[in-house]
Image 1 (cartoon, helix red, strand yellow):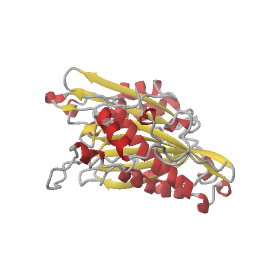
Image 2: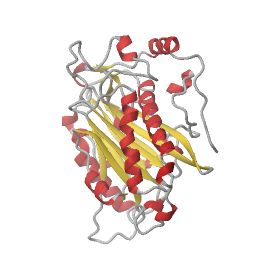
Image 3: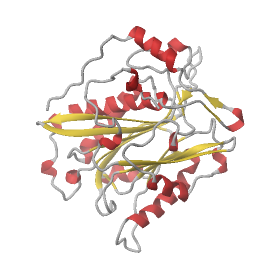
Image 4: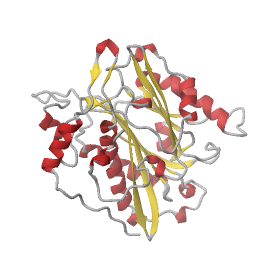
Length: 358
């Protein structure tokens, strides 16, 4: 499967990591469980594992930002209150949040050692609605899917129509799972920022500033600009930089800028959430806050968030394929050749070179 960069385009200014995925962040792995069954099941689970052993006892700093809060995710209030993440993050469809949360709880009980009988933990599950081509009312997902996603986790994971992105729709085309990464240099030290998106939202697709959706005559709006683009986008962002939850919150709020670059307006019915965590535990209460990067050096991290979110949207669509499902509904693949023709006409022949200060 080809990704956006495979066609010669280089969005953004910062250099990418080796895989150009969230898993370029040390320790992070991603797994999927994909369910394509019969004529109406097009759904799944995607699990993001920070890669910290006994995560419940070794919490990592985290933060969350809400763009438009029309969503049903679990665990957001405790992240906001305490600034830590203590379980892997699972993504799924809207009506499977409860079942997937139960599965995540069972998983956490298995993978964390020495839990007390009265231990509770904050299971984080995000969602988007894949109801255009998936029959969510059949409630097919459960603990087995969470276990499968956990067992399937790896560094070089699949993108496109997989896991929680199996049945999603973006800008009236087929959406899915997308990912990207950037290398940030501060005080001659290299850090990685990576994003994973579950794209299921509307607007008028814009790629590197070019109004592709309008030029193709297909957007999530009708000619009177009455919104038809309700949907959602889960944005998971990881870094290995020593940052506090407050600083990660500042990064999380920049995720909306990356989404806006692609043409999203965060419609009335859209649930747009950004969760940011660091695998460096310096920013956890009781650790070495003095080791955290200074606020005056955060701007490159903000840029990395914007760029990885933007490119993750592109990858989710370029890697997706046409898929039909419930009631014969069909989500068409982005017409790649037509898009390439538009981009080559309107973008400069040479993209800006990636920059690094290390």
